[in-house]
Image 1: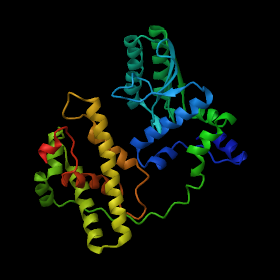
Image 2: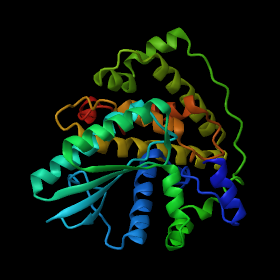
Image 3: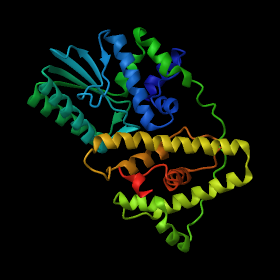
Image 4: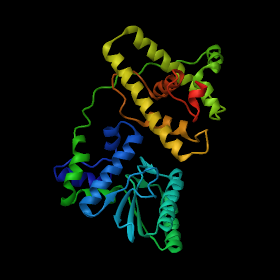
Amino acid sequence: MTATSAVKSLASGEPPINFAAHQLRAGNLAGARDDFEQMLAMLLAAIHPGARAISANPGDWGIDILLGELSGLVVIWQSKYFWPIVTRAHQAQIRESFDSAVAAAARNGYRLAQWVLCVPASMDAPTAQWWDNWRARRQRETGVQIELWHENALRNLLIKPDCAHVRRHFYDPYAGARAVPAQAPRLPLRTLPPEDGAALEDALFVRQLRAAGHTEVGAAKREYFNADLLAREILDKRVPEELEALDEADGMVHGIWEAGFNHHVIRFRDDPLLPGLHATVMHQIRESTAFPAGLRAGPVHKCGLMHRVVEQRRAGWVTHWRELA
């Protein structure tokens, strides 16, 4: 959030608009993407009463939110919850989304007049330069007008009187978000003994990683080792609050994996190795702010909890993970 927008919000007596609120609402990045898209659908309906969301079943024709008729001229808004900065790593997704929208329009007999990318962050300088060049070139090639709604553009829309209900619904509940429960002290990390590391080579979670094409698994072993120590300590002490926190964290990581797995199965229908699934899931686990405060876990422990789920035969990293289990 810029200093200017924060000052304006404070002067108006309303809480600043923080797009990280979507992660707090949803509990993880996968859920935040859906929550951000729902906010955009409500925002656009307030600005353009005819705007409507399009569900993916199984594909969405490259459309998140649509204005116009699919028998004629349309404007499309593409929602991308890139956080906290839009970087080079996101460029391929932007290109693919635009190309998908253009191809679907040609294939299904309607005309795409404008395509708007909506992101809750700003671009770094190299990505902004890439965007300007790519936008100009693709506009010339396709005749489609391309726009960017970044964080400040979205805030300027959300503070409009007609959009006040959207702002209140998605962002006002987080005015007091600073008053969160104190985080329990993290359990110190332990170094994985070499003999234990060698023994883990036959563990199911390692075999699942190997099946997905991973050659380096040392960090994964250490994550599992520390998470298992944490879980054993909690289960031995049987403190109700800690048991509840462990159970909630287990459900969180399993849910993050399930959402990522389902997405990758659709995206990589012909590749049983599901490229990028492990990296995506672990990134979301590390970045999640929704883990229970009573859990004495840092990022290494949290990733290790995901490996425990795999070890318990409840998840995997390839389409045929159940066969390996």
